[in-house]
Amino acid sequence: MQKSLRVGQILYTNVLPVYYYFDQPKFEDRIQFIRQVPAQLNQAMAAGEIDLGPISSFSYAEHASQYVALADLSVSAKGRVGSLFLFSKKPIEQLNGAKIAFTNTSATTVNLLKIILLKFYDYEISYVTQEPVLEEMLLGADAALLIGDDAIQAKRNSHNLHVYDLGELWHQFTGYSMTFAIWALRKAAIADHHDLIAEVHASFLDSKRKTKENPAPLIDYVHTHFGGEKEEWVRYFQGLQHDFGDVQRIGLEYYYRCAAELGLLAAPTTVDLWQAGGRQTKTTLTR
Ligand SMILES: C=C(O[C@@H]1C=C(C(=O)O)C=C[C@H]1O)C(=O)O
Image (cartoon, rainbow, N blue to C red; front, side, top):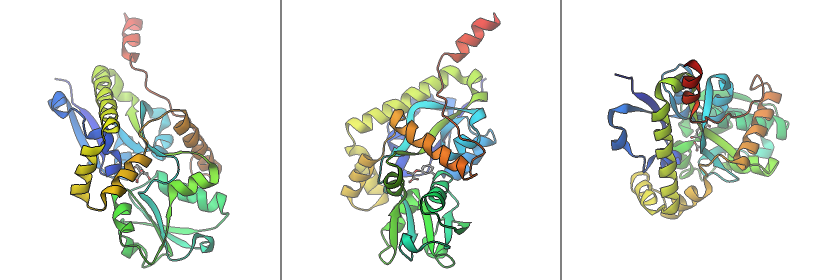
């Protein structure tokens, strides 16, 4: 029997529109979910332990020769995101020379913050990477960067701190959208699972479409399970985009160029979308 397809899921609410109506029973034992924070999914995908799923867009670039991306899926925003915050003891204008604590769950956003502080503010900084616990991070640092639900929760008790939304800073400096995660597919998994990948992709797109048409059930679900104000969740999901069109691609590829310029990436890259039908072509050729 063919091995099941190993599919990742980011353990944050930001991806829920793509998973909420995912048709799990339809796939039964044909797929296996691996649920983790982005940094661990990045690692597992690079090690060949996951075949497809959302990873940090930065990590996609690091391993671009081994991956393609599923069309029209991402975690993106043009401007404010609401779950990527720099929590700082001082205003950002005073952070030159500062020590910053980075969450160990992220790849895209830590490098985005480096781009903003090094390239746009022309600062020098030092940093440490830590577990995402704000109070502990701030014990030995001037500012701390959190992402995902850790950032959402920390924001609720951050009254004495200066709080900056990374999507908003990026948009202010560049005018671009930013894409934090894309759905990577390991090229090595395509031959064995072509039709199943196409079905899984379609089910993700279907879930995205349904939550967009009627976000209320998802909003109720996250409000019940994650607390906070309902209005905040409505605003959060309105601000996030899960598409990957020209607007998202242009912003992301500019980010890749900035990262390469600073030596954070070996080279700038583009995102190659998976074209379903590849296997049929191969079969025809080998006959
Ligand atoms: C919008 C977000 O995007 C995320 C940020 C990521 C990163 O920094 O590497 C990876 C995946 C996304 O979950 C978020 O976590 O709040």
